[in-house]
Image (cartoon, rainbow, N blue to C red; front, top):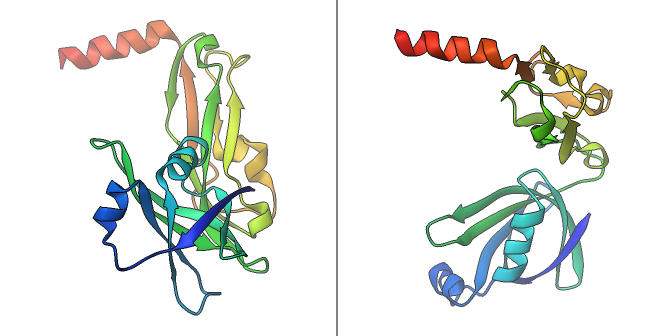
Length: 191
């Protein structure tokens, strides 16, 4: 689990002023806390977090010497200004199951012999903190035309400790023949 250092938020300064000064306002919440904890991190730490983690990723947040094992609930990003406006963390309790999302990463897309269609990018699930899935990599290098991969086909989602929040028969990806795909596109453009 990646670790980061944060400071308690100074409420004498407005969020807009903090962002101009290179600081991102954040919050840590969870049933284990008496009240939510308003924190702030520097922009470079936030951008590093955005590059390496996603919503649903686990991260350890240290505030005033206390460590909070957490999950990134939401990372709000303004693409026009290229800035992170806010990050929400949820504290993980070792004995409690929680909701998260696993991201599906496709490897070797350039080696697919046909037309690749990806239908599922994220898989919502419930698990204990130690069993949460951040990302699942699917290697497409040896997949032939005609392949259909469902959530239930992915070994990481077959564990008994994972409770899927979607049907295991949902299609993650399909590889179609190029000629058939081109024929269907031509038919649809005629109608």
